[in-house]
Image (cartoon, rainbow, N blue to C red; front, top):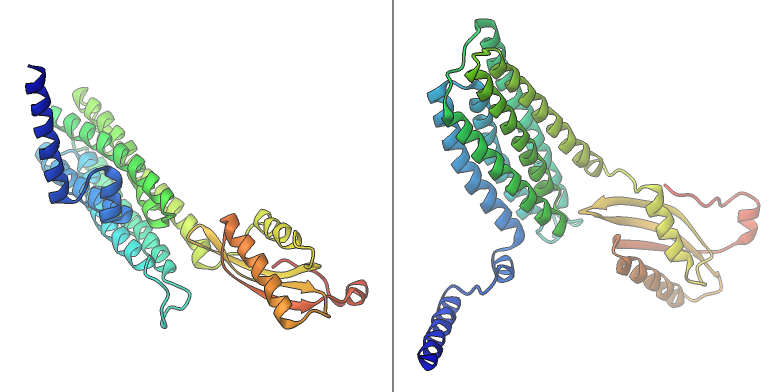
Length: 331
């Protein structure tokens, strides 16, 4: 009996090996390596949103629930934004070339703003329909289908938000994190659809359009939140004071560096790039000054917050500092 079980296990192992060899994936880590985290995020977003659109719109039109229809149209926009996110992420990961010598990262920011814009458009459409419902005092027909659709949507959006947030943080993707925030808002929207469902049971006709208005508010808030993150990087906003101090501390940890000034940094994909000047002994040879700058650059990039830093070498002249001709600055 023991031998029979052993043979059975051996057959199972052989079968498992053949399946693994056939599909080329033996774990979730292999799956991520094979397809890429960004592509997995796009597949999840498009697949789940596609199913939710069909579910919400069919049930929404059958029951006449404006809050569920609003949620359904929001899911259509989620399909569009998921596509934007996928395209933006793919373009932004392309290496620098002759036409884009600083890389393609800003494409990600542009697509992130496109997500915010689609949210603003959807909020206008939903608000218009809700006003019409309030004016005409349209009553929502009670149906358990509304509860089923809203509950499925809530669970699906929460799961997607958690997965995409983790993926976005792991690969420093602004556009994927923006999409995750959008899904979190959608989950809250589903809660208000459930509230509208409860209102329909008690024949509170105004609760459905009012809940739709609240969903509009959530959508607008998310749009502003996404834009608030993307616009500063798109406009090359400078680094915060703590980052400048960190750079200065690392540079001045080298005894050959006497002073740091004219620091210009901007954020790219979660790290800072730019240039600054270091003052060194004027009697050093050019090769020695270059060697010092390379050491400083390597230490900065090892720290993890800096990338592609350009360092200019200047002669250190204490007399000029004392006379006020050379004022160390951070800009």
